[in-house]
Length: 276
Ligand SMILES: C[S@@+](CC[C@H](N)C(=O)[O-])C[C@H]1O[C@@H](n2cnc3c(N)ncnc32)[C@H](O)[C@@H]1O
Image 1 (cartoon, rainbow, N blue to C red):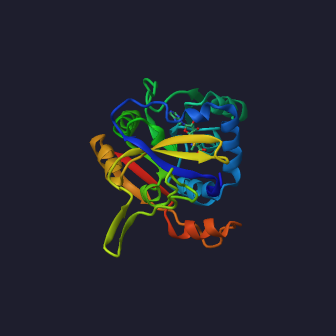
Image 2: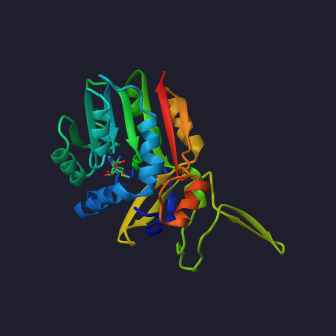
Image 3: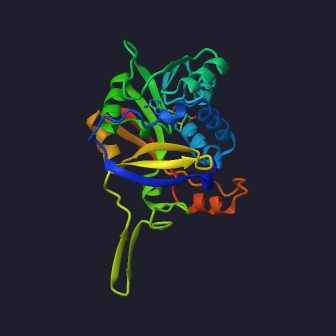
């Protein structure tokens, strides 16, 4: 969805205190789920930054098995199938998403299942693929371990998530808290002896974002980069490639502000880890 329709704010509480498995619950709403799928088809973020770069990370898929986490309406699974994968499974928390996926794409196993409790037995995959979904897992450490256990040796875990700098740096006006503060930036200002620090890179926390004209509150995790790396390493996954996609110069976006922003501020980060 267009960024102008999003407002992001940090919400209280740090990770790890409670088992929060409900971050992605908003996607269970059939209307939200449909709006998301429709918006995705025209959103420059998906068209120019996320999807093409995620696709570049895929290896030759001929005869390979792929598990898609948080697969949404199934379009990415279908793309993976078209690229030659012989076995594709898509899991998602939202029944509405899975119903859509099942009725739209054939030859793929779609299952309603949480990232926090992946119930797949006696099967290992060449690739685990998660397009903008890992930040809904309650624990990145637990997810990394589970993904590692599902990968074949030399298997790949490819995923995209909001760039951590974007979460700490960008506050789209009129973001505002009850004191009327807008557009906090990441950094510090020393003005006439008054020293003010904005933001906090190191603290993992939950974020809230209001999509579709504030109608729907989406909640997700923010983790600093080091936490993503160390959780992968502990799970036996080694970094193979990291991408910070920049909007192509010739991208056709009517919103000039979004164009400039995507050319200068990282919106998404993409990782490819390999199981050692
Ligand atoms: C931003 S959407 C991305 C959808 C899809 N990967 C794509 O790129 O089109 C995030 C997806 O993650 C799913 N999701 C959120 N929390 C989840 C959880 N705990 N377990 C499984 N899926 C979850 C949502 O239902 C939603 O479909």
